[in-house]
Amino acid sequence: AQTVTQSQPEMSVQEAETVTLSCTYDTSESDYYLFWYKQPPSRQMILVIRQEAYKQQNATENRFSVNFQKAAKSFSLKISDSQLGDAAMYFCAIYLTGNQFYFGTGTSLTVIP
Amino acid sequence: DAGVTQSPTHLIKTRGQQVTLRCSPKSGHDTVSWYQQALGQGPQFIFQYYEEEERQRGNFPDRFSGHQFPNYSSELNVNALLLGDSALYLCASATGGARYTGELFFGEGSRLTVL
Image (tube, rainbow over all chains, first blue to last red):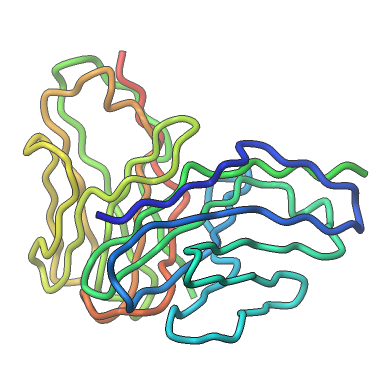
């Protein structure tokens, strides 16, 4: 079975600063996908960024980037120039093709004005 | 382009009752998955429907059942409700059945409270 661990239940960051959210995972598979999802108070989960495990290059989406360390099974999310709208729960997830998504327990991010 | 829609948004039931939750996938999507998100937890996979059949199932009892209709919409049924079934139930859609590699699109969820 796959597991996803987010060891930071809560994080805070000053507006315009940078914050990194940690995620580790465990799987015996070599072909999988990793995701960061954001869940604001409105409840709808929104995809932040996606990484294919076979790609060595770290994914980037505007102010969001990942540090993917496959050997260490680590997948951290960096948010640069934090904005008030970034405040939300952030979930790390792993997906194996033909299997299911496994989510971590989430990190609550507070952005301080 | 309508996204994933779920109904009802909130509902309250008592122990032992049955509940049906509904989901319409994003336009063009044919695969629907259901997740249970307990308070303070990440979503837990219940099952996935594709081509009107349950394709995969998570570690949930048979009290949880579902259905997918020809228009790809889906229902989640929970029988003999327990207090522990209180949670946010999320529907997510995608394309391609078990072979999809893209993102899941989520609805806003149905908040179920069991008293």
